Image (cartoon, rainbow, N blue to C red):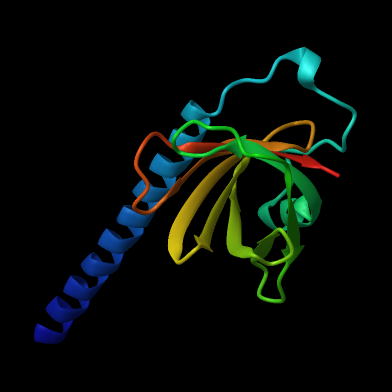
Length: 159
């Protein structure tokens, strides 16, 4: 009987972890959707379209490539110029990201039509929540640990 009780307690802990992970993923996905502004029809170009009906594994290769990056810093000032982010598929199945020839690196995961990215910038961790737009571009917000002000923004357009 003691063994059965111990097994049930262990399963309860696993359920708590799964519920916490599910709630966190839902909150991050919902936040990303609510913070990304809608694009107007005039801003849509003829770039390859991202198919929202693709499975998770099929959607990753659709993101592989190089993108020009524009955006704003957390203080609201626009970037001085454009940068480049390269997205590649790692042997592990994760998406690897490199900004400006490896000066900044990150790892990403697709959740629905959102790309969640964690990266390291000048010794500080950053999180990007990027909406995958129908035209193949990505746009969203990012925040870096210890920065003050509102979150920065970025837009990535395929080169």
